[in-house]
Image 1: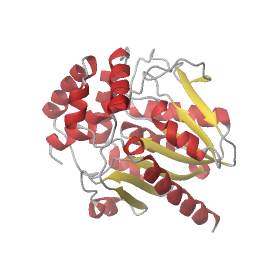
Image 2: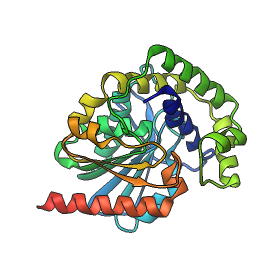
Image 3: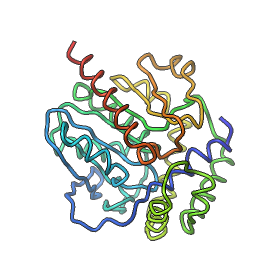
Image 4: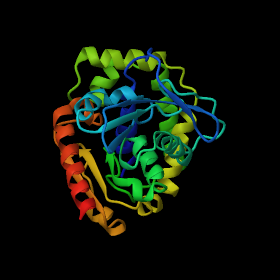
Length: 289
């Protein structure tokens, strides 16, 4: 994958800051003493755990939270450095983010878990999945892993991070509208940009560095260590290379949603939720066999 394409994949993660959160939410302490905020709605034996991407928070899943809470237990998490979670972390890595998710799962004693992660959150749920064993039903990355053999150079990574942080400090509606989205209203986009501008951004640079380190050095091995099927929900803006994926991963599949950008769950919420429901039902049926 060329770096210009990589810029579109990851820069669009800026879309995920949907304003400041004000209500009190429960927290747990991760293994390194950082507070991790989360929210639980719904009941049921099966739990869907949603994890946002870089620059976002748990509110990106609000529509899905309401949709699925009538049938499942739905857990949405703010990763450290984002939303209402703490940012007093000393070492920022994707495995540590995975441990944050595990800390919430263990605190809630979830026994039948579906992990859904958007963008960098896909990295995170893969790391969490490696340690869940029999509790895990399926992992659903969102708009990620289109070409799992792609590698970025050091200069490409440095260039991207500098550009990403500059945009984070001074985001504009025009940038997002012209470069990253297809189907988000102006009012929603303004809310995203305003929330992005107001965020303190502690740990954001180190999180991006952690993402690229993981993608270049650990992605394929981590994906191979997931003890359950992996089923991506990707947009059609870049092809998902199933041949490459299948070369490394026997239990890999992907569903494609057309006409949307990176923020699939916001841009096409009904189609996204229907696709996710089909994936979950098939995984649960296979689990019972």
